[in-house]
Length: 114
Image (cartoon, rainbow, N blue to C red):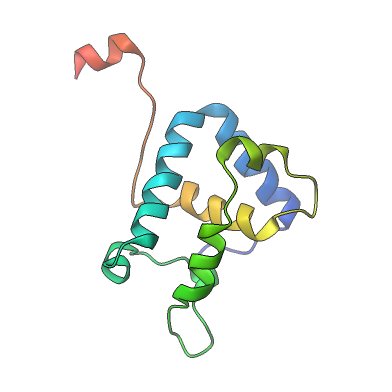
């Protein structure tokens, strides 16, 4: 489990990732949202975001879906003011820093090599 970072550090990390490769970040977030909204979400969301596991070690899908449904778009995340949307930034940070899926944008010549 990742150590808890201060909200300002999370904001900087998310902003950096969104500026570095916005298309890949948007795709990762979209895949996560699709998995969270799927009827198979319990098996699709592995690992599960630790922020949404309650004290009884149960997955809190209601809170997760509430945050997913109110999640601003990638462009709007970058524009959030300090102290605004910290829970959304924490979720997006978890999505983007998860090692279970790597997505990167490739240049046209790199695609031909694959």
